[in-house]
Image (tube, rainbow, N blue to C red; front, side, top):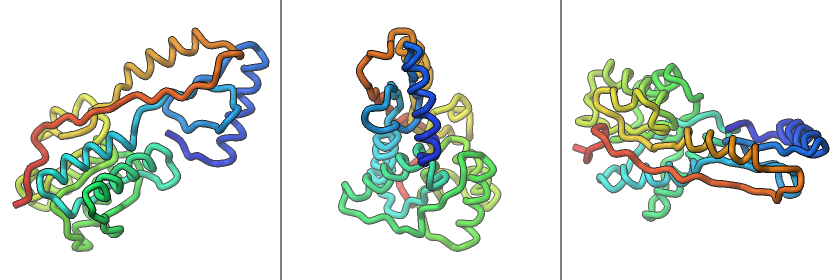
Length: 218
């Protein structure tokens, strides 16, 4: 993802036009589209759909107050995952509490800081959905430092399914993102596209990986 700003669009459009004039084509991997008419191919994964499925899973366990540890508000990946969080609630006729949507960045330190702040501020929640596994790892440390058990006291889920997610204690429920497939497809697409190729926007699916960190609220 990236910050979807006018500067980003203008800079990337110039690059795309330059490549097109040289008979080649720009492939954007996990980046926001540039709009109609831009000579680019966009390949990304379904951030919103993955978050929707993950939050739906947490809701299905009986949770209703789910803290969301999101990314920077202007970051397209963070925006998609937050939209999925909201949409999953509304699909069940629920309206998420705005106080439970916190923003930072996609780092372990941010997850630790946001989780400590939520606990210090006395926010009421029974589950936490983090925008990345790294954020979830930081949140898990903060929960353990506060003497809380996961998932006995608080359920926790992440996003990305990076390798260490299964090695956390408990193993982290998360969303699998096909990063390797995205990379292979980007290479094949770049090698097979020319300036005359039609515009494309390819969206790769994600899926929930259920492990041990989410359970019904006590």
